[in-house]
Length: 196
Length: 169
Image (cartoon, rainbow over all chains, first blue to last red):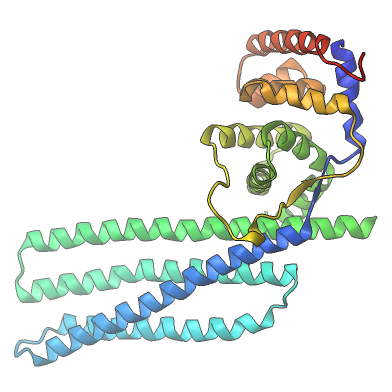
């Protein structure tokens, strides 16, 4: 066979689609991603609430029983309890908002995107929340006359935690982009079918 | 660029160049799961690339570049869906159509599949009438290198076709 003949054979496929896109399978893939996203959100919300409420309460109690209570520690415990309350309120709002999405592929995708958008916002909020907490801890160190090395160690720890949180944040952003691309693909399929 | 504009361009591109992506899928991904995985990778990359498209090349060249680069990276990373997944997840997003396909085309794809990942790209672009210059630009190699590769691929395919038995001919 000559190469020109191969080219003719190759060109013959331009008018016939060798593959088709299965919307149902795409829907299931979306549902799977959605379940994954839901699970991760659920766990990260609960962990945040428990961690902030727990640490805030412990710091408040310990500080109250101390004769030399630190103002910075009081402020930090209040800040942590407020953070836990904020996460709890947004969790309640998120769960209420879930009901507005239908069970169609479009609905599932829109829900998945909304959930991931929420995760992006939550992880961003928690990441930047480290800053006031770090400042308050440092203030507590200063009040308590702790060594500079302890403060430096804390700064390094917070910087590392911030990097890890940024990585997590970017992970959610990538997932969101992925879902948006799938939704656009689906919108495209619909518009192509409407034109037929 | 607004998200809506990006979406419109993406929809249009996908509608116009779906066949091109299917060709890359067939040349690079052997199983249904691999095709799904690679398809998702390619469409995500195409979506992301929309804002950076500057009309310096044709859309076909741009999408081919993205699809092939994604496929090459995907092959090298060997990113496959080997992990166990629930049954609903095993359904294929991209499935082969039941339309009768020229047996010789199947043979041609089989031969292309046997080439290394860069040569597969060269073969696809060559069969889709891209110039040496365009192939070099898409794959980031020199035109002379493309020339050498094309020569070798043509010779290889012609030699293989001599042993190919098409309806006993």
